[in-house]
Length: 314
Image 1 (cartoon, rainbow, N blue to C red):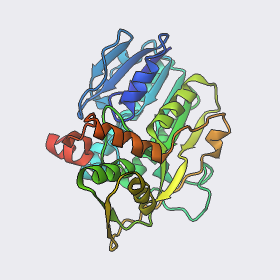
Image 2 (cartoon, rainbow, N blue to C red):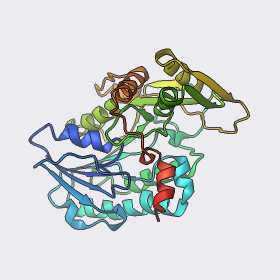
Image 3 (cartoon, rainbow, N blue to C red):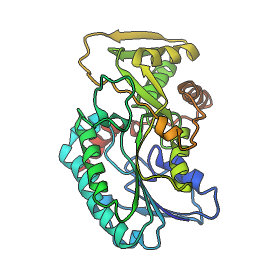
Image 4 (cartoon, rainbow, N blue to C red):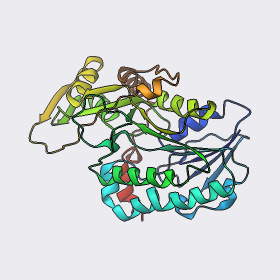
C-alpha cells in the first residue's frame, strides 16, 4: 500500500511510520517540517519530504492509496502563541490537501482530530452523537477541519479519529502532556506540580493510538468520527499513579482557573473490533525505564511552546 503521512515526523507520527514500515508491502511518504527534529531511520521503503503542508504539492499525492493526516499546530497553548498560523496550518492547508487528494483519487483519508472537540459536557457518556462545542482555539480548528472534510466525503472515505491525551514514549518525545510531564517531573525533580487537580482528562497510550490508525488503515469500516480514549482520569489521580511508581512529593496549586474537564466514551471504536492493550501505568513505567537507562530525550524540543518560541515559527 502507498501511504502518505502528513506530520509523520511528530510525536505520534514517528513511531507510527516505523511500525507501518515493518510491513514490507507498504511504501511510505512522510511530509513534515521537522521543526522538532527528525528521528526517522533510513529505509528503502520510506521517502521523506521536508516541507510545510501549507505549501502542499500535487506531486505528493500521485499513486497514493491512503493519507494519514497528523500535521497540525498541536495543543491549546501552542495554538494561542499564533492563532492565525494555527488556522492556516490546521484548516486552510487542509482544503488544498483535500483537493489534491480527490483529484488523485485517494481512497481513504484518516484525520487526527481531537477528543477535546466536545468541550465541557454534563453527560456521563461523551459519544460521537454529541455536538462538538470546543472551548479553545485549537479545538475550534479541529471542529472546522472536520466540517471541511465532510464536504469531500462523497469522493473519499474519511475517518476523523478523536484521540484522547496521548501518553508514553516516542523517539520524538513530548514532555508537555500530563502523564509524560508528571512522570518526568517526578524522575528529575522528585516533585510534581499540579494545577487544580480535579479536572478530568481522557487518556490513550501512544502504542494504542498507533494501533488505532493501523486498524482503520487495514479494515474497511464505516466512514465517520471515532473517539479514541480509554481512561478518563482526574489530574490528581494521574499524579497518584506516577507517585505509585516513582517516589515524589506533590505541590497542588488550588487557585487554578483551568476549566478544561473532558471525558470520552469509545464504545463505537470498540464495536469495530479494536481492543486497547496499554494503560497509563504502562506509559509511566516505559518513561521511567528510558530515564533510568539514559535513553530519554528531554531537550527543549520536547516542549512545544518553548521550542516554537525559540524557532519563532510563522
